Length: 148
Image (tube, rainbow, N blue to C red; front, side, top):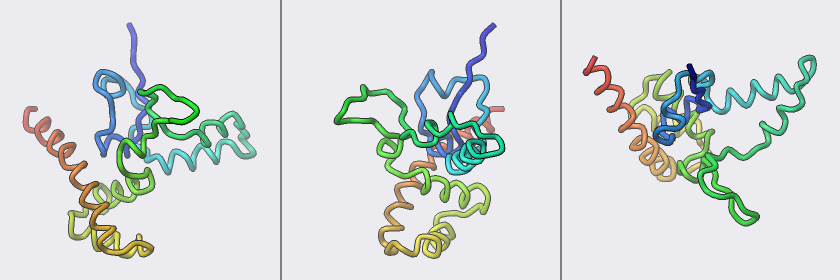
């Protein structure tokens, strides 16, 4: 009897960034409820004294990649390029959507304050892209709940 373990975080799940019959078909996902930012902070904590798991430093510094395309000296496939958003942006979106329960308008209002280094039209563009990516995932969940 075999069990498959998934190594995808909540940001990837919210975004729908997964491969069919690979990370989406696991039996157990120990980091499935943790954002990439929180996971990185935890690994940094565990790499420092008194725990000192210094082998985690290579994990912390690694560029997140699904490794679906061959890596060469000139090219490395990255999760953030594939998703069109950074993990930091995804973490903010996830907190605003799932914890603060923001819809499109209240999310935009929150992002205006949080991302004050960006112009409103840049925030709107990022938000529009991100929110449209999350919408199919939400519909999938609702369809699943209705079928039960």
